[in-house]
Figure 1 (tube, one colour):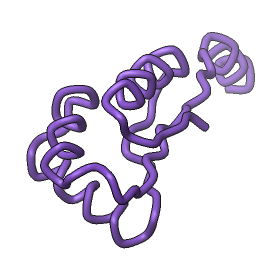
Figure 2 (cartoon, rainbow, N blue to C red):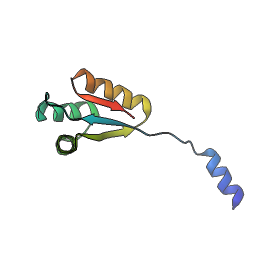
Figure 3 (cartoon, rainbow, N blue to C red):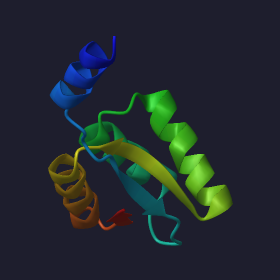
Figure 4 (cartoon, one colour):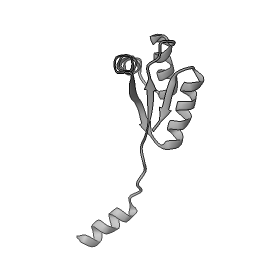
Amino acid sequence: MTKELTRNLSQTTITETYRIILYNDEVNSFEWVIQALVDICDHTNTQAEQCAWIVHMKGKYAIKSGAKRDMIDRCVALLDRGLTAEVE
């Protein structure tokens, strides 16, 4: 049992998960933010709308998580659209 568990653990790849944090701003419209989340983060319209409201109410929200390179690429695309975001 111990050997099997050790073998399984050694074959498991540990990947760190990174998050895109989107910040509220007074510049971009809800429609613009929602469309960016749909286009860039592959959110559904409902999911994007919910994220936009949470960002609006709380000031920031983790809108997407995943592998570092993917999160950086998506974050850069959000920044290119004028949104305020960072990867953590």
